[in-house]
Image (tube, rainbow, N blue to C red):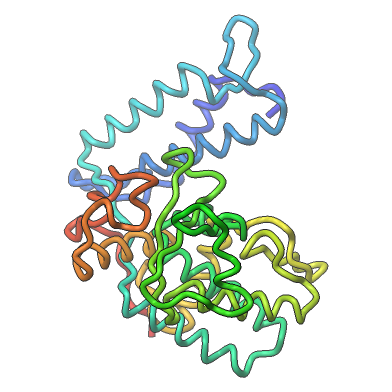
Amino acid sequence: MATAIPEDILVFLTQHWLPNHAGSPTTSGKLIAAPTSLAGVKSHLAKDFDLQGRVGDWDPAAQLGNPMHSLQIRDMINGYHNQAAELGYHKRGAVPLEEAEMLQLLERMCCDLTSAPLPEQLLLIRDGLVFSLLWQSCFRGFNAGGVRLDNIVLPTEGSALPYLLPKLGMKAGAKLQVKPDHTKSKKGGHCQITLTCDPLCFTSWLRPAVALYAIAGQPITNFLTKPLDKGTKVYAEKGMTSNAIWARLTKYLKAYGIYTGKGVHSTKRGSMIHQKDQMQATVSEVPQAAMCLEEIAEYTDVHRPTRRKPLLA
């Protein structure tokens, strides 16, 4: 990592990574690595180089900077996208998680809460909170996992916490806004959430979560959902990552027999489809609309192909 140059990265990607990740079908019959996966590897490697202190655009003359930010790597990524399209690759969407499935998931988790020991209760209520937040907000995983108490506000911009804790002072139909610190698509974006006061509503999980974590001596004072350090058994004061949420979501879906290839984006796509088709919401009324309007048509296309897997017994 300390001495790698763009040519080294190209050798790694073309001779090692691409041949070993050819799992996406094309109309030509050939299996290839998905272009989005390649772009993800590029992003991860760029961050790794940044952490090594190799930052900024690549300077070929001085041999300095981040090699992932070089013309060679950009051309290779763009060329691979074009090649994949010529081979007949079609981007596949996340398998939508339907409202009935999300409700079944959260209701099962509620039932498990009643008999679980405290350490497991803490995990269950944290996970239920982040799953319900994913559903209502249509956020990406890292947005939902990184929500802090200060991010929950009234439409008038004041804090919503006095109306949520310790008792719910808002009725079903009331509206809140959640404003994450960072978004992928738009700075300063937010989503508007309509309270439903049922297991699908994140406020139904927030109040008992705050109470339970206080009892456990690990009060929620900043981040709503935090990762557990398995060594110390302490919840770190930082948000959950998309990968961590994905691992927890698939764990429950498989345990409850409702997993068919769903991931974190399944909640986003399923909720958007539900809002548009079942609730007759306009594009601007979908919760995440204020963050990225152009995504909604793509996510609500029910005919978009998915990588669906068989239902587990």
